[in-house]
Length: 277
Image (cartoon, rainbow, N blue to C red):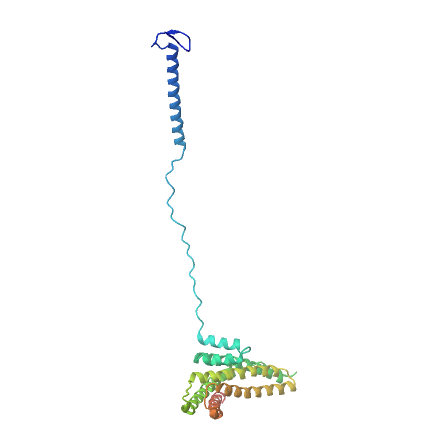
């Protein structure tokens, strides 16, 4: 004999009280309901959660087309030699001249001669202005003649090229002849470079003389004349001094330069006669 712990009913040894049976059934139903609710909530969670399908394929950083670096084109050696001469001639004149002679470029020499032509063109303009100032009176105004400037500049161009080329040729031939015993030979390139430098220096001094002559006063006119004469003498000094860098037999140098300058002057005179008659 035993009693139900819930209601106190007397029970047999193996008998289960009806109140306990009802409680077990209710508890089982509650567990079943709780399990269903949990499954339902998990299903709702799974439906609400966005399905993860993997990160999109990584294609790497977009390619950046970097502009290709183009190295600056190297300057023409002849132009570089002329520019180097003008940038150094006022600070390191000796180095400038030596480096210019070592450029060994005929093109550089003729570029330098072309600069001389430009300076002669400036000189012709200044000379024409001097004539306009000097010959203009209250009763007569002399007009500026561009035709005269152009004609004179054209003649100067031919004279400059002819003088430098022929003088350089004679200078090279005579130097190689007299220096044969010293095993010294120079090229036409070196000769034309030499005479192109002398021409540019004398023309620069000539521009200064013409600027002085624009002042229509007798003192400045005479001063301009002296400056012009100085330019001719200075040209000789420059050529002879630079020639010592090329010539071994210095005793023959005065003769060599005199014959070369005479040949160049002869060519210049022929051109002047042909275009002024």
